[in-house]
Image (tube, one colour):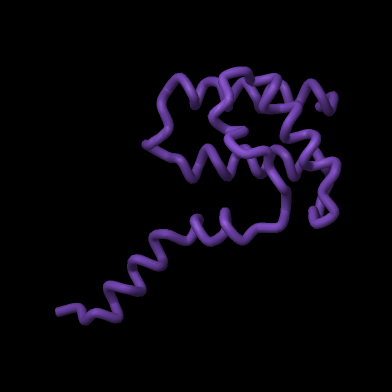
Length: 100
């Protein structure tokens, strides 16, 4: 029978992404950027955040794309199909902005 420590450890393990999101200094994002409805606006905001960040450890393109992928993966099943499609289109917009 699992004790209370096992349950607490399991809860902490399952919610690893929340502290990463709250304490990450990789990029300072515009509030609500991932809920915007225009893929190009999302891409431009991520580009601006990545290029102005002094904490990133890689290229602006990779930082922006990583943050976008992190959000999509973290949202998981809670992300509507429509918003997932918008975010996937934002990836294409980022590639265009960085000529990748």
